[in-house]
Image (cartoon, rainbow, N blue to C red):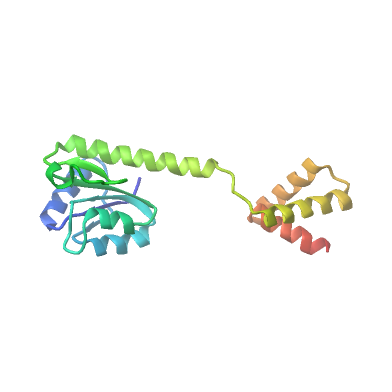
Length: 181
């Protein structure tokens, strides 16, 4: 489940959106009435979905999107007259009036997209700098020379040390180098 932040200038609008979401099994983490509140909570939450109106007293949805942390998606609920013809960027727009099922399916679609992005990020190997590659290579060379290992054996040994010490491969290589030097 994602963190869901509902933010509307009028508290009763936010409450109505919250009720629709909760009734359909989507828990709402926090309810806000201005952009500053959203940004404050977003900093604590780290990632999620903001369901909001087009504007607040202190900013509009485009300004809010620019200031939100990278892990947040923004769903703006507003009449098409407010946003049609404007460059909305990465903001998903749901035209008002809307059906409850449209709101729920759009939020679920954004949840699925965030889950897919997280899985993709976990699958990507970390990008190492040349300096980091050099340190790992030196540790492998040291293991090969001192312990008569092959390169795959040295790499596996580093991985095992990394897992056993609950550190990254780079940190394990640095530990090996500091022990044997």
